[in-house]
Image (cartoon, rainbow, N blue to C red; front, side):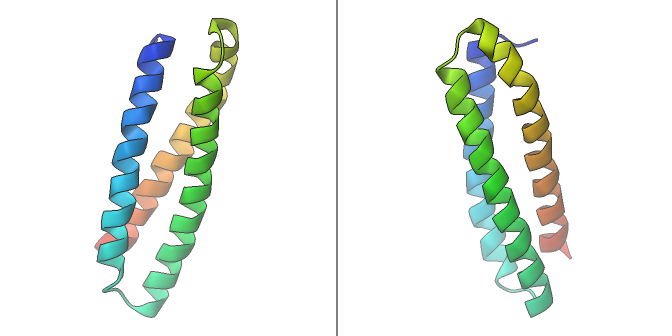
Length: 96
């Protein structure tokens, strides 16, 4: 299991990658049909909400001690998986 600082670094790096990917996917989605674009926009909206929640959890972890970190890590891992799944869904839309 990663220590607190490694965990924070991992999340920070992944959030940067995801932010860049959203911009790239939005550019690709502009050339899609109206229905696909609408579905994409809905998915991106949900993803941005989840990403914002993940950012808030990360900020709490940064401000927490080790005992609180362990408690927050489980919730953050679940949210992380939700965001990762959201990106997989968006990739499918862009590739279709």
